[in-house]
Length: 399
Image (cartoon, rainbow, N blue to C red):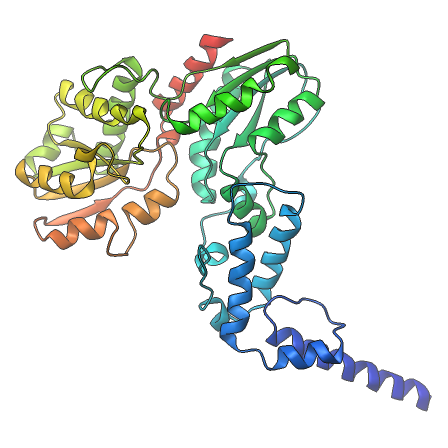
């Protein structure tokens, strides 16, 4: 009996030492550390613990997938979970910050990564840039995917993201696995798919679209039929004056949605109250940047005098935040509603547009001092039914 009691006491002492070490280390979840390891972690400062986690996050904040990626994502999350709340606030790296794991972006369990196997011979692969904002992924990307699936019951709809950085973020934080383009194409081959239709949710024929085409071309001989459908706004066109049916439909849909959400009876009624709607796109140095100028042309052609098109990147130049602020002031509007001209209301919408930092669009419009109010509508194009119908039509056109 005495021997059993002594053994129990010894085990409790070891467990207590291991528990203490776990509370002071940044990225070790083990409870069987050697005395040397325990001694080292006991002297670790909060800053050192936070730095280790930041390094693990920076290691997965990359655009290239490797065989170690999944293990790295798991390690980063375990290390984060081991931090105290005070230590989490100190996490700061080249790309790491407390929001990487700590920000609440909605319930990831509501999302379907659409990576199931045994799908038959016909597949529609919906390819998106992606977003780590869970609610936006469900509503905007998921909304488009579901619309395409409902319109094509004889085809299996699957998902791929082009941004490995986002795929890693979702995997590390929520343990949700989303295929990149290569993985999705390999999955289609392994599933015996014969007819493959790729539907990009990209806004335009820009750099992302070009990269997607290269990836698909490399698999062209793996299927009997491969087709790539148009992005949301269709063909780019030769100059800023050229518009098309897709651009007109999107313009009407996003303005109608913004007016409705803003509580106005009409766009003209909003204008009478001094309200301007500013739609913020991403912007690009690609030749397709003329698309944003074309969208402004489309707004003008529709008589939407109090609608302005801007871009985060300020390309084209007239779409920079500073130039849009000047244009809205010159037009005499005293109230502003900001809304993304993006398929997904993700990081750019939440941070670059509606964030509290000094360089966000909301902050810059407010700091100008010329406007009575600056309101934000954080909602992507993908959640609008009329926009979803455009993707359905583009998919149908190549089937």
